[in-house]
Image (cartoon, rainbow, N blue to C red; front, side, top):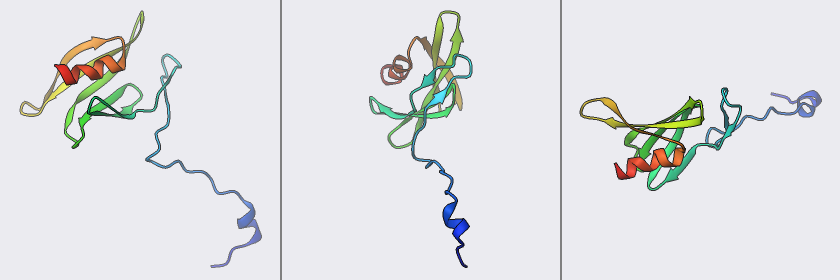
Length: 108
């Protein structure tokens, strides 16, 4: 295969790596969320979509989810614990910060 001068002159489009987190924007609030692929207190958070983050242990076991929802006073976060034997989720509580919602998995 030969490479022409046109091929060399045209820039290669940048394709983001799937391993590099990017900020997410809330369509509702217009605010930018910090990229979610982080660890907090031994738990890992992975952004599933704009309003939902999966909470797992270091070994990959799903502990639950943290869901963002709109409230008249601002963003709220609902923590839901996964019960594997029952194959269902149980709401643990609602919080004003994602960090507080995540921490409840460590202490509840």
